Length: 80
Length: 378
Image 1 (cartoon, each protein chain N blue to C red):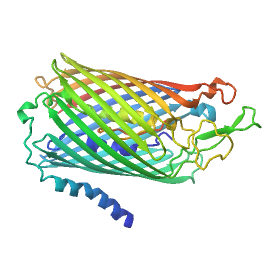
Image 2: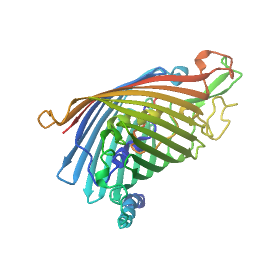
Image 3: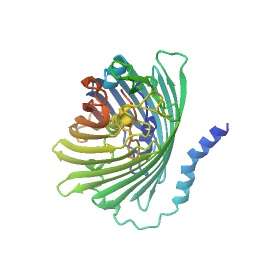
Image 4: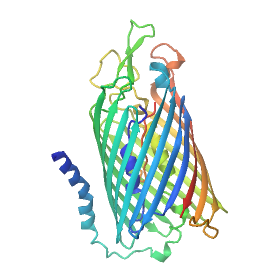
C-alpha cells in the first residue's frame, strides 16, 4: 500500500512542478510564430518517424550498455 | 529470453516524442517491417503504429510490435543450443491537451515465453515563452517478471523506475535544440538466467569452464542527451546529437551522431553516421581467474568495453500528397532504410577461433538492419 502511494506521488510530481512553472509566460519570443515556417518543415521534425526511431533505439539498447537520454526513445531487447 | 532491458524507454516514446506541447500529434498510421541480421542472429517482424485524435483535446496511440528471433549467436553456440523465440509487445497511450499543457499516459506490455514486462508511464509538457520552449517531465514504472524456459518454478521480479526532464528550445528561425536528462533505477533480478561466465580451469580440456552469471540487484543510471537540428539555406537539414551516460555498474559511455536530410522532388534522402564508445561493468570479465572469484560476475558482451559504428542510408517517397488524397487519407509515403552496424569488442574473446586459452582474438560484430514502412496521414 505504502509502495503504491509512493508511486502515485511520484507520478503526480511532474504535474505540480509544471503547474508552478506555467506562470512564467511573460518573456517576449525572439522568433515570432510567423517566422517559424522553416522549423515547421517536415525535414526539421525531431522525431518524424516514431515507429522507426522507436525500433532503432530498441536495437541499440540491446547491443550496448547505455540507455535513455535521447528524447524520442525506443524499447529494449538484449538479444543474444 | 530476448527481452532484457530498456522497456521503460519505449514508454518514454509517448512522453518525449512531441516537441511542442500546445499541439496534439498528427493523426497517422505506420506499418513497418524490420529485420536485424548479424552475428548469427536474425530478428524480424512487424510494428504497427496508429494515432487518432478524438475531439479537440484527446489523441490516442496504439502500437503492436513483434520480434521473431532465430539465434545462433557467439554466446549461444559456445554455451548453449541455437533457439527460436518470439516477443510480442502492445502499447497504448493517450495525450490530453489543455491550453499550453499536454499530459500523457501510457501502458506497455511485453510478453515472451520466459519474460513478462508491464510498464506504466506519465508525463506532462508545458509550452512557454510564446511556444519557443517546451518543458517535459516524465515518470515511468516498470514491473518485470523473469522466468526460465526449462524451469517452470523459476520466477524473479525486476522493478524499474525512470525519471526524465526534457527541454526543447527554438533558438533561431533555423535552429531547434533539445536537452534530455534521464535517471533510471532498477531493482531485482537483472542477470540472464541462461548466460554463463568462464573461468580458468586447468582440469578442463579447453583450459576453462563455465558457471552462472551473478549480477548486483540494483542499478542506477544517468543519461544526458543534447540534440541540435539546423535548416540549411537550400532546404535541407543537418542534426548533431551527443549523449553522455554513466551508471553505478561503472559503465560510462559517449555517443555522437550526425544526420543529413535532403529532400528532392517527392523523395527525402537521409544519411547518418553514429559512434558509441563505452567502458565495461565493474563485474564484467572475459575470463575469471577461478570459480566464484568475485561477489558479482558477468560475461555479457553488451556490458563489456566496446566501440560501435553505424552508417545509415534512408530514402522516403511520397506517393500521395495533400493535393491528391484518397478519401479520408491526405498523404502517403513509403520509406526504406538500411543501417550497417559494426561493433569492436575490446575484451570479449571469440571462442570459435579455438586459440589457446587467454590468447583468443577479440570478437567483432557486423549487423545489417533493414526497415521498410508505409505511412498514412488522415
